[in-house]
Amino acid sequence: MAEVTIRLNRLGLERGRMWQALLAAVAIALPVAVWLGLERALGESVQNIGDGDTLFLQSYPVAGASLEYELPGSGWTSPGVHFADQRQNFVLDHLTASVEVDSGVDSLERLLDRRVQPVIAQNGYIYNNVRKYADEASGLSGYRADIIGIDSAGSITVVGNDKGAAAILVLIAPGADPAAQDVDPGPYVATFALEGK
Image (spheres, rainbow, N blue to C red):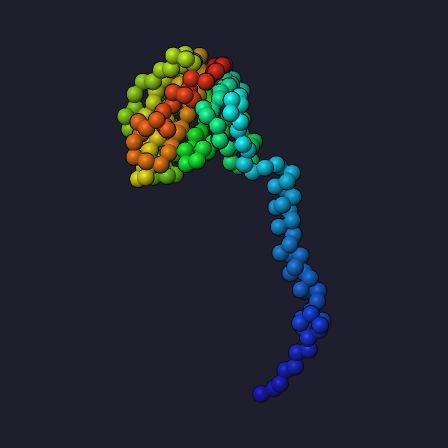
């Protein structure tokens, strides 16, 4: 057997291998620096919503409908990078709310079925009890359905202005009762000002 001698420098690296160690350090540090720079350039990843803040959505890709609304109560946050004009997600403790606006809608019932499919497919929920829904405060009407999961319950509500514009509200909270006050669309839909077609 042959003997091999490895000579180390003062840093504990094999002599003549300093450039590989520096290259490895740069390869580790560079992605972290880029990520932190992007995060600062794009702003906070969680946006706080103030009590009584008026929020706006615009339909996409056809800018034919707009929605102005408020979230009931205080303490809401909106996670993620905020580029979406058509849909926005919100969180309050364990309650999640998603608000969306759409244009050129022929059937609100068909829109409800189409919008609930990604929600139930992603989380293993089911939906049932589709029924007509109307809100006197906003003057909007449409359909509401219950969403039921293993440890969560909620509602999906689709309302329109009879011109083709529609607003979609999805509420999900821990629990087993889709009729719970937490997932009642009334306080949300009452603030909806839906315009366009």
